[in-house]
Length: 308
Image 1 (cartoon, helix red, strand yellow):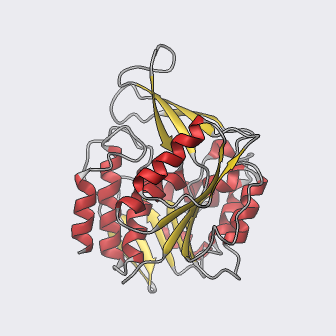
Image 2 (tube, one colour; image 1 turned 90 degrees about the horizontal axis):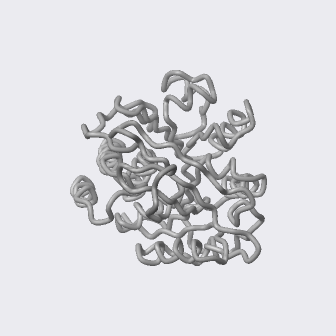
Protein backbone atom coordinates (compact mmCIF):
# COMPACT_ATOMS: atom_id res chain seq x y z
CA UNK A 1 0.00 0.00 0.00
CA UNK A 2 1.36 3.43 -0.97
CA UNK A 3 0.76 5.88 1.89
CA UNK A 4 -0.41 9.43 1.16
CA UNK A 5 1.62 12.59 1.50
CA UNK A 6 1.26 13.61 5.15
CA UNK A 7 1.07 17.24 6.22
CA UNK A 8 2.01 17.96 9.84
CA UNK A 9 0.82 21.43 10.74
CA UNK A 10 2.05 23.04 13.93
CA UNK A 11 4.44 25.20 15.90
CA UNK A 12 8.15 24.52 15.32
CA UNK A 13 10.40 25.43 18.25
CA UNK A 14 14.04 25.49 19.26
CA UNK A 15 14.86 23.89 22.62
CA UNK A 16 17.87 24.74 24.77
CA UNK A 17 18.92 22.21 27.41
CA UNK A 18 21.69 22.09 30.02
CA UNK A 19 24.13 19.22 29.84
CA UNK A 20 23.37 16.12 31.88
CA UNK A 21 23.54 16.76 35.62
CA UNK A 22 23.30 20.54 35.27
CA UNK A 23 20.38 22.95 35.44
CA UNK A 24 19.40 26.34 34.08
CA UNK A 25 20.42 28.13 37.27
CA UNK A 26 24.07 27.09 37.19
CA UNK A 27 24.83 25.79 33.67
CA UNK A 28 27.39 27.66 31.55
CA UNK A 29 26.54 25.82 28.34
CA UNK A 30 23.30 24.69 26.69
CA UNK A 31 22.64 22.20 23.91
CA UNK A 32 20.42 23.41 21.05
CA UNK A 33 17.82 21.18 19.47
CA UNK A 34 14.57 21.39 17.54
CA UNK A 35 11.21 20.61 19.11
CA UNK A 36 7.44 20.88 19.01
CA UNK A 37 4.77 18.18 19.07
CA UNK A 38 4.02 18.28 15.34
CA UNK A 39 7.71 18.69 14.45
CA UNK A 40 8.53 15.55 16.45
CA UNK A 41 5.89 13.57 14.58
CA UNK A 42 7.12 14.85 11.20
CA UNK A 43 10.73 13.83 11.90
CA UNK A 44 9.71 10.35 13.08
CA UNK A 45 7.51 9.81 10.02
CA UNK A 46 10.35 10.84 7.71
CA UNK A 47 12.75 8.46 9.48
CA UNK A 48 10.23 5.68 8.88
CA UNK A 49 10.29 6.44 5.16
CA UNK A 50 6.99 8.25 4.67
CA UNK A 51 6.41 11.31 2.47
CA UNK A 52 6.06 14.15 4.98
CA UNK A 53 5.56 17.90 4.65
CA UNK A 54 5.53 20.43 7.46
CA UNK A 55 3.32 23.54 7.52
CA UNK A 56 4.22 26.30 9.94
CA UNK A 57 6.08 29.56 10.38
CA UNK A 58 9.57 30.51 11.48
CA UNK A 59 11.24 33.78 12.23
CA UNK A 60 13.75 35.03 9.67
CA UNK A 61 16.47 34.33 12.23
CA UNK A 62 19.22 31.77 12.96
CA UNK A 63 16.86 29.59 15.01
CA UNK A 64 14.47 29.46 12.08
CA UNK A 65 17.30 28.49 9.76
CA UNK A 66 18.30 25.74 12.19
CA UNK A 67 14.80 24.24 12.17
CA UNK A 68 14.56 24.37 8.38
CA UNK A 69 17.97 22.71 8.07
CA UNK A 70 16.86 19.94 10.43
CA UNK A 71 13.80 19.25 8.29
CA UNK A 72 15.80 19.19 5.07
CA UNK A 73 18.45 16.91 6.59
CA UNK A 74 15.77 14.42 7.69
CA UNK A 75 13.89 14.48 4.39
CA UNK A 76 10.85 16.53 5.46
CA UNK A 77 9.40 18.71 2.68
CA UNK A 78 9.73 22.35 3.84
CA UNK A 79 7.75 24.06 1.06
CA UNK A 80 4.94 24.97 3.50
CA UNK A 81 7.34 26.34 6.13
CA UNK A 82 7.05 30.13 5.91
CA UNK A 83 9.63 32.65 7.11
CA UNK A 84 8.12 35.72 8.82
CA UNK A 85 10.31 38.83 8.87
CA UNK A 86 8.91 40.70 11.86
CA UNK A 87 8.39 37.82 14.34
CA UNK A 88 10.88 35.48 16.08
CA UNK A 89 11.07 31.71 16.09
CA UNK A 90 9.56 30.24 19.27
CA UNK A 91 12.00 28.96 21.89
CA UNK A 92 11.79 26.92 25.06
CA UNK A 93 14.28 25.98 27.74
CA UNK A 94 14.29 22.60 29.46
CA UNK A 95 15.14 22.27 33.16
CA UNK A 96 16.44 18.72 33.32
CA UNK A 97 15.45 16.33 36.08
CA UNK A 98 17.57 15.63 39.10
CA UNK A 99 17.11 11.86 38.82
CA UNK A 100 16.29 9.58 35.91
CA UNK A 101 12.59 9.31 35.30
CA UNK A 102 11.66 12.41 37.29
CA UNK A 103 10.79 14.27 34.11
CA UNK A 104 11.77 17.79 33.12
CA UNK A 105 10.19 21.19 33.54
CA UNK A 106 9.99 23.48 30.53
CA UNK A 107 9.96 27.26 30.17
CA UNK A 108 8.44 28.65 26.96
CA UNK A 109 9.18 31.92 25.19
CA UNK A 110 6.69 31.82 22.35
CA UNK A 111 4.51 34.95 22.77
CA UNK A 112 4.53 36.93 19.54
CA UNK A 113 6.32 34.15 17.67
CA UNK A 114 6.10 33.63 13.94
CA UNK A 115 3.96 30.50 14.41
CA UNK A 116 1.40 32.45 16.47
CA UNK A 117 0.80 34.95 13.68
CA UNK A 118 -1.42 34.92 10.59
CA UNK A 119 0.98 33.16 8.20
CA UNK A 120 -0.52 31.76 4.97
CA UNK A 121 -1.47 28.19 4.17
CA UNK A 122 -1.54 28.13 0.39
CA UNK A 123 -2.86 25.84 -2.32
CA UNK A 124 0.73 24.88 -3.08
CA UNK A 125 1.29 24.01 0.58
CA UNK A 126 -1.61 21.55 0.40
CA UNK A 127 -0.86 20.11 -3.04
CA UNK A 128 -1.09 16.29 -3.14
CA UNK A 129 -1.75 16.04 0.62
CA UNK A 130 -3.76 12.95 1.53
CA UNK A 131 -3.51 13.06 5.32
CA UNK A 132 -3.11 15.90 7.85
CA UNK A 133 -1.83 15.56 11.42
CA UNK A 134 -2.53 18.26 14.01
CA UNK A 135 -2.46 18.56 17.80
CA UNK A 136 -4.13 20.43 20.62
CA UNK A 137 -0.91 22.34 21.28
CA UNK A 138 -1.36 24.30 18.08
CA UNK A 139 -4.99 25.00 18.96
CA UNK A 140 -3.81 26.88 22.05
CA UNK A 141 -1.00 28.87 20.41
CA UNK A 142 -3.23 31.65 19.06
CA UNK A 143 -6.67 32.40 17.63
CA UNK A 144 -5.07 32.50 14.18
CA UNK A 145 -3.73 28.99 14.61
CA UNK A 146 -7.03 27.71 15.94
CA UNK A 147 -8.77 29.08 12.84
CA UNK A 148 -6.21 27.28 10.70
CA UNK A 149 -6.98 23.99 12.45
CA UNK A 150 -10.70 24.57 11.97
CA UNK A 151 -10.03 24.98 8.25
CA UNK A 152 -7.86 21.85 8.00
CA UNK A 153 -10.53 19.77 9.78
CA UNK A 154 -13.44 21.20 7.80
CA UNK A 155 -16.04 18.69 6.57
CA UNK A 156 -15.27 19.92 3.04
CA UNK A 157 -11.65 18.70 3.21
CA UNK A 158 -10.28 16.18 0.71
CA UNK A 159 -7.84 14.48 3.13
CA UNK A 160 -8.10 12.39 6.27
CA UNK A 161 -7.08 13.93 9.61
CA UNK A 162 -5.47 12.64 12.78
CA UNK A 163 -5.61 14.69 15.96
CA UNK A 164 -3.49 14.20 19.06
CA UNK A 165 -5.30 16.00 21.90
CA UNK A 166 -1.96 16.83 23.58
CA UNK A 167 -3.50 19.00 26.29
CA UNK A 168 -1.07 21.55 27.77
CA UNK A 169 -2.89 23.20 30.72
CA UNK A 170 -0.48 26.15 30.94
CA UNK A 171 -1.46 27.28 27.44
CA UNK A 172 -5.19 27.56 28.11
CA UNK A 173 -7.28 29.97 30.17
CA UNK A 174 -8.84 28.03 33.04
CA UNK A 175 -11.69 25.77 31.89
CA UNK A 176 -11.49 26.72 28.21
CA UNK A 177 -9.61 23.76 26.72
CA UNK A 178 -12.23 21.02 26.92
CA UNK A 179 -14.84 22.49 24.58
CA UNK A 180 -12.33 23.53 21.93
CA UNK A 181 -10.42 20.25 21.93
CA UNK A 182 -13.63 18.24 21.80
CA UNK A 183 -14.95 20.29 18.88
CA UNK A 184 -11.79 19.64 16.87
CA UNK A 185 -11.62 15.95 17.84
CA UNK A 186 -15.18 15.30 16.66
CA UNK A 187 -14.24 16.50 13.15
CA UNK A 188 -11.31 14.07 12.73
CA UNK A 189 -10.84 10.52 11.46
CA UNK A 190 -8.28 9.38 14.04
CA UNK A 191 -8.06 10.79 17.57
CA UNK A 192 -5.19 10.02 19.96
CA UNK A 193 -5.61 10.98 23.60
CA UNK A 194 -4.06 10.11 26.94
CA UNK A 195 -6.48 8.72 29.51
CA UNK A 196 -5.16 11.22 32.06
CA UNK A 197 -5.80 14.22 29.81
CA UNK A 198 -9.23 12.93 28.76
CA UNK A 199 -10.11 12.73 32.44
CA UNK A 200 -8.81 16.24 33.05
CA UNK A 201 -10.39 18.07 30.11
CA UNK A 202 -13.54 16.01 29.47
CA UNK A 203 -14.15 14.13 32.71
CA UNK A 204 -13.90 10.88 30.73
CA UNK A 205 -12.22 8.29 32.95
CA UNK A 206 -12.47 5.20 30.74
CA UNK A 207 -12.00 4.42 27.05
CA UNK A 208 -15.74 3.79 26.72
CA UNK A 209 -16.48 7.23 28.19
CA UNK A 210 -14.15 8.78 25.62
CA UNK A 211 -15.86 6.88 22.81
CA UNK A 212 -19.25 8.16 23.91
CA UNK A 213 -17.93 11.71 23.54
CA UNK A 214 -16.65 10.91 20.03
CA UNK A 215 -19.43 8.74 18.55
CA UNK A 216 -18.66 9.60 14.92
CA UNK A 217 -14.88 9.20 15.08
CA UNK A 218 -13.96 5.89 13.48
CA UNK A 219 -10.62 5.38 15.21
CA UNK A 220 -9.77 6.35 18.79
CA UNK A 221 -6.43 5.59 20.44
CA UNK A 222 -6.29 5.89 24.22
CA UNK A 223 -2.77 6.02 25.69
CA UNK A 224 -2.25 5.26 29.36
CA UNK A 225 1.43 5.63 30.19
CA UNK A 226 2.91 2.39 31.53
CA UNK A 227 -0.49 0.66 31.24
CA UNK A 228 -1.85 -0.94 28.05
CA UNK A 229 -3.02 1.35 25.26
CA UNK A 230 -6.45 0.82 23.71
CA UNK A 231 -7.76 1.45 20.22
CA UNK A 232 -11.36 1.59 19.03
CA UNK A 233 -11.60 0.64 15.36
CA UNK A 234 -14.09 -1.36 13.30
CA UNK A 235 -16.56 -1.27 16.17
CA UNK A 236 -14.42 -2.92 18.86
CA UNK A 237 -11.64 -2.23 21.36
CA UNK A 238 -8.23 -3.90 21.31
CA UNK A 239 -5.29 -3.36 23.65
CA UNK A 240 -1.51 -3.48 23.53
CA UNK A 241 1.09 -3.63 26.29
CA UNK A 242 3.87 -0.99 26.35
CA UNK A 243 7.52 -1.95 25.98
CA UNK A 244 9.37 -2.17 29.33
CA UNK A 245 12.05 0.52 29.52
CA UNK A 246 14.03 2.55 32.03
CA UNK A 247 12.57 6.04 31.79
CA UNK A 248 15.05 8.88 31.44
CA UNK A 249 12.62 11.56 30.29
CA UNK A 250 8.99 11.48 29.16
CA UNK A 251 9.06 14.50 26.83
CA UNK A 252 8.20 13.41 23.28
CA UNK A 253 6.86 9.95 24.15
CA UNK A 254 3.32 10.65 22.97
CA UNK A 255 4.56 12.17 19.71
CA UNK A 256 6.72 9.11 19.03
CA UNK A 257 3.80 6.75 19.69
CA UNK A 258 1.54 8.82 17.43
CA UNK A 259 4.07 8.88 14.58
CA UNK A 260 4.76 5.15 14.56
CA UNK A 261 1.08 4.32 14.96
CA UNK A 262 0.09 6.61 12.09
CA UNK A 263 2.89 5.35 9.87
CA UNK A 264 1.72 1.80 10.38
CA UNK A 265 -1.96 2.57 9.79
CA UNK A 266 -1.26 4.66 6.69
CA UNK A 267 0.83 1.78 5.32
CA UNK A 268 -2.24 -0.44 5.70
CA UNK A 269 -1.37 -2.40 8.85
CA UNK A 270 -3.87 -3.36 11.51
CA UNK A 271 -4.30 -1.71 14.91
CA UNK A 272 -2.36 -4.41 16.78
CA UNK A 273 0.86 -4.00 14.79
CA UNK A 274 0.36 -0.25 14.78
CA UNK A 275 0.12 -0.01 18.57
CA UNK A 276 3.15 -2.27 18.91
CA UNK A 277 5.12 0.04 16.61
CA UNK A 278 3.97 3.02 18.67
CA UNK A 279 5.15 1.43 21.91
CA UNK A 280 8.59 0.59 20.44
CA UNK A 281 9.24 4.15 19.29
CA UNK A 282 7.89 5.70 22.50
CA UNK A 283 10.20 3.45 24.53
CA UNK A 284 13.17 4.60 22.48
CA UNK A 285 12.40 8.28 23.03
CA UNK A 286 11.83 8.05 26.79
CA UNK A 287 15.12 6.17 27.22
CA UNK A 288 17.01 9.30 26.10
CA UNK A 289 16.94 13.02 26.91
CA UNK A 290 16.21 14.40 23.42
CA UNK A 291 12.67 15.12 22.25
CA UNK A 292 13.01 12.82 19.22
CA UNK A 293 15.71 10.38 20.32
CA UNK A 294 18.56 9.28 18.05
CA UNK A 295 17.81 9.19 14.33
CA UNK A 296 19.90 6.02 13.85
CA UNK A 297 18.31 4.13 16.74
CA UNK A 298 17.60 0.41 16.47
CA UNK A 299 13.93 1.21 17.22
CA UNK A 300 13.32 2.32 13.63
CA UNK A 301 14.65 -1.00 12.30
CA UNK A 302 12.47 -2.85 14.81
CA UNK A 303 9.41 -0.97 13.61
CA UNK A 304 10.19 -1.73 9.97
CA UNK A 305 10.44 -5.39 10.96
CA UNK A 306 7.08 -5.22 12.76
CA UNK A 307 5.53 -3.67 9.67
CA UNK A 308 7.15 -6.16 7.32
